[in-house]
Length: 173
Image 1 (cartoon, one colour):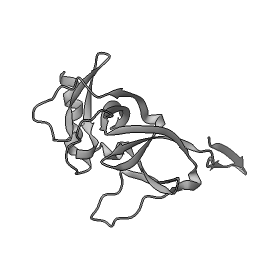
Image 2 (cartoon, helix red, strand yellow):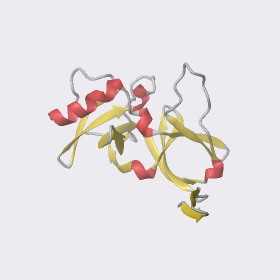
Image 3 (cartoon, rainbow, N blue to C red):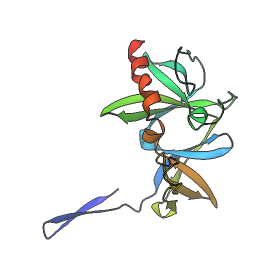
Image 4 (spheres, rainbow, N blue to C red):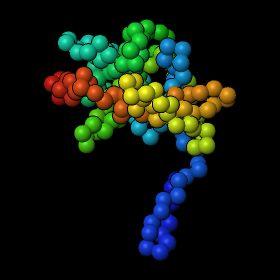
């Protein structure tokens, strides 16, 4: 939690040193994490309806308590081959902020691991890959048990022109 301090008419925000919580998951042998504040729930993979003429990374839609929710194959979104559905495959339901609106999207992952605490001192800034390679989808690199966990900026991961069809898909169903 951060606190605001007012001295001499100026307000400064003190950054929290409390650990933040992240949901870790596997994707193609790598470990990634998302801040839990943007996660609504985790569901079993199943009941997916494919939608024609969508980008390859959009696997289809699910019915989540009467709402149509698009499902993104995160492996495909990262330029890898489509995820192979296994026993531990699941869909992480997240809320995105797109053009000022909240949008619910499912993210297909190989397996969910655990919710972990990562202290701010254990988070390194996202590496610079140069101007020709996008790195804005990485919020940071968390150090956990001597290994790096890639902390994702889910709004950046799921933004883009090809994902603009998501709103049209959800509204049309």
